[in-house]
Length: 134
Image (cartoon, rainbow, N blue to C red; front, side, top):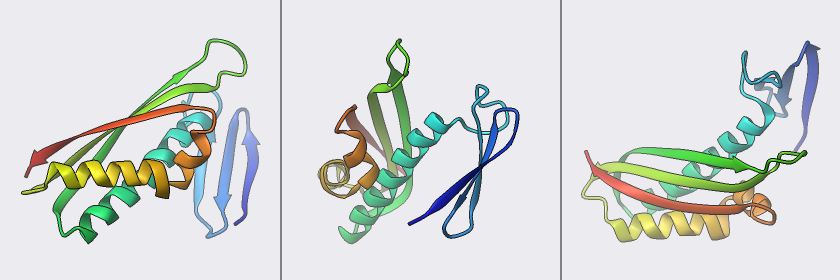
């Protein structure tokens, strides 16, 4: 897998993935696009959500929605690394069983989500969930 990031001016950068998709990153407080660290949170949430939805569908759960709210806490010293990241999954659907959601979230965190597995070597990642009847 390859990617490229090009400086396009001021504190603005354009990332291009191997598949040709582009993302704008703004190191100036995220005024024109997410900052690189915001992208880390988005990548974690995206990776985890893909796993959770896939696992729930394989368990024949009638899922109609998945939102993950991500809260990252950074240390006060430079470099301002993440110390803690919490993911709260909100799963909606019809008659979705909590035991299946709990299992899906745990499997993603502990076994399948590559982003989480890389980050949890240095970041305390926690998660919880709620199920909403749709």
